[in-house]
Length: 247
Image (tube, rainbow, N blue to C red; front, top):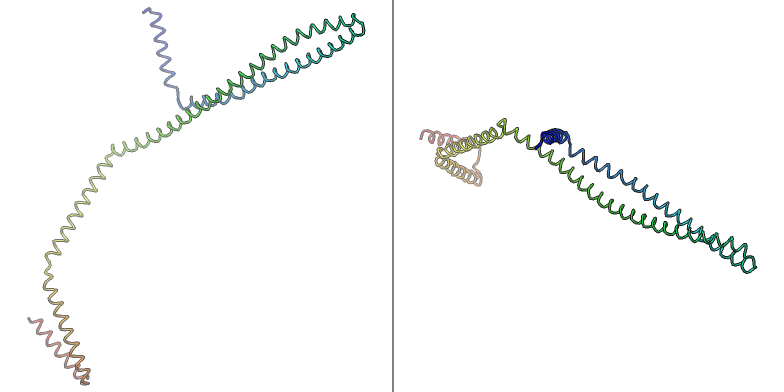
């Protein structure tokens, strides 16, 4: 490889890398969408120009044909009147009109084809434009989604860097362990309490209450219920309670 080619290759690599570094795909796509939309009015203007040419040639052709028919009738009238001198003047103009009509018809046909071709080109362009714009918009939406995903990923990485996730899991584990220990202590405390004695005392209280209620009903039915009896019953009850406490 010659020195010049190596120099050119180095320059291309240098400036190509610089251009790639400053290119923003999002901005370029947005600019492409604007440029494609801006081409539509220009294309419509060109099509309108072609259509105007078709219309102008149609009017010119109709004018030539009308004049041709008029001169043909006048030439026939002059011949019928025996005025060949006048008929010859008409004949020259009719010959010119034939040539003009032929040329104008050819130009009109070409203009019509150009107009139809322009409409086909516009239709194809609009279809391709819509496809490219839709593709570009979808790429831009994907670009925005990717930016948000990148932010979320950065946030998650920051959590991991600062040890938040590890600390969180560790604290949850410690709380669960402490809760389990407390529940175990509660179960052991419940198991250590002698509930049988409490139940026996509850049953004795129920029996004594039933016996007192029975005695009260008997005294009430016999009519012997008075203050002295209530006092005696209360003293007896206190004696029973004292004896029970001694036991």
